[in-house]
Image (cartoon, rainbow, N blue to C red; front, side):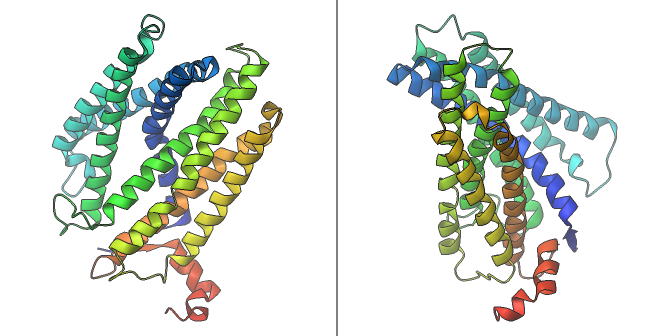
Length: 322
């Protein structure tokens, strides 16, 4: 079977993926800020963790409702063979895991003031919720991987490109969580009046978190190359790879400007631009992942719009790769 992914398909799917993985990224940032703020005795970091905990709870709640909705659709709509909703066992598991994540993270959010004196005890349910989100996203990615490569083993081999791609997805999830967290701070500016100094500090800190995880994410590309060097074919990876590097660099430079600014709240257009850039980063990573999945199979099952672009621009002929 042959599948074609247009630019519209890639943009739409990547937007869904980005919002989906923020159910991991935002809670992870809340946990990191709460832990670091407690250890360093930084009141503003703890306040930021509290604000992010509310946003993280909304993402995990949405993830739980989506899983439950898909499971209900699988029962009542009676999808035919070959439809992804028919895998009721997976979606039952997804409901259990996301429900556990919602329970633990709800406990973390609702006991924010009551367990303030016992920070270690308070962070335990947050860590459990993050572990559940990681497990659920990993299982979802594995199920999609099995659809793209049905002959692959149930558990990917240690030298499979599945693992570096999954790690990069987690890193980009936290970077996306930082970007959406900045947007959330703008929205809450007049609702949570913590003072100008707090928002100056919190916005700059989220920009730094975004820079840190955005810079780490390309390192997994080296891992991908080493585990797939025998079958590695850069023909259709150069164009999306270059676009990914360009948009990621642009995002990092904007975040760096916000982080170094004395008045980051004045850079509202830059803050609004960052979600668009991270969306484009996810889009180009999605295209690259699809091309990699096609690369490890023996026959062409996927074709993305980037192939048409590369052939139209003559890049494959110029680089001598066709």
